[in-house]
Image 1 (cartoon, chains in turn red, orange):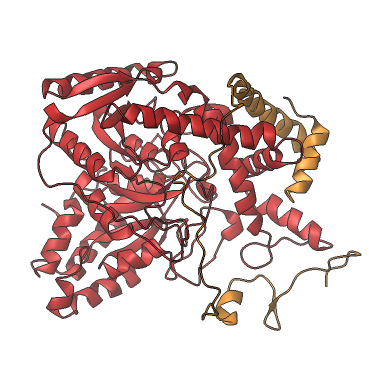
Image 2 (image 1 turned 45 degrees about the vertical axis):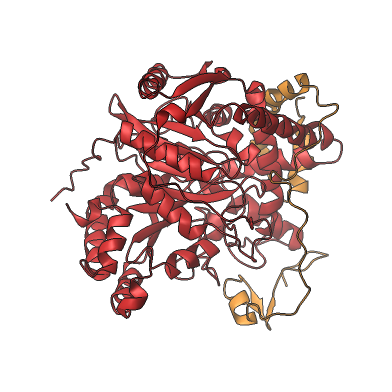
Length: 486
Length: 99
């Protein structure tokens, strides 16, 4: 097995035992990135010299210290909306071109303290607004399974980097599905923990009441390993949870004791026939293992997209007001301060970001706040209550991650509303704050299909356990060839 | 609830975003379509429903107001487009003019 094919868990245990040096691992990863990245375009910034330096530092640690590192020598990619001192942080926006953060995000320092090596920053939709990574101001990222198709978004670069075996694991952020949807399109595992599990300090805020950082990986164990390192209370993020995190049991799942809910509202319009067929096959395989699969009702799901696209842009319009050309980033000229603000923001933000700022500003403006923002927050309560009632009867809820498979470039970018509707299965987890994971369930016509598992608030332990059990029932069959195999 | 071009111009001013005259019609149409989609929320009775401001329902966390070391002025100004005398320089606030 080549080093680039290894899991994060295997790399870390070999580096801890000195069966593999972090330097040797990083050299092969650098070579893999050199061969594959030109045809994928997953990274906005690479700093392989710094990565080599970090790898050497890990190899030079006294063995007692190295043996304590849960991610010893593991190469990790980080989405470009998380602050790093060693590389620029642009959120794929022109307004932050060249910005180098004066501090590291908490997730970045936690990864580094655990022995991980940050190799680069991944492409994304500008400010995480989009479902295809086409809204990046810098470049397209290609789906490694079919390079004429999008990798999904907004964490498209992270998903593509993991699927193309350039890194075993990456960080993404998920505001309405931005980890799970690209994970599904690229055939990898993507995990959004409970709101507040992972510190948002140093994450460029999109919608603060919905944003959550999580891992993308090639299996559930690697996703759990990264989760274990990045989760936990952080005094720098007042909304981070003080509750102890629980990790999945190492035991096999006894499916006869698992109650799985399938929402009856999710099988409706817009669901691709091949995705629907795969869901049916997944259900019958679970049932054949003795799991009880029952229908659950989430009646307010049909309002989720409308509520989400009011709450998220409203919060974004407030969060993005800090990009005004004064303290960092791009500044346009202007006769006076007001004109400078207006020109800077008009020239620095892309079309989708401007669309959402206007929508959010309108939803919060005098005379419309009650009708839009407050109404959406009330719908959010009903969506939360739907889940609370459902989880009284089932352990986990199963849905497709997306209603369709990876689409072609340009197919949806002309119609904002059409793009929004593809988030229909993922936004509810953010509105309710619950944990959710997308796991691959094979290919259909050569393209990956993803299944989404939703658990109750702080139910990560059981959710990850079940997701790992499913991975054993439905193992992935290899990775895209990409013509780079030596 | 469709929007007028005047409303879009008003919202753009609130958001400090200059819209090119040629773009206003398109932006108005796009936003109008999205807001049309939102009107379905009116079908839901939320008369006695509390809004969700925070999903976990934590109490507002408080901390001691203690002076601690923070970023140096040099680090804070590192990315500034116009650092001047240890401060952020900006164009004139009133009466036009660039300095």
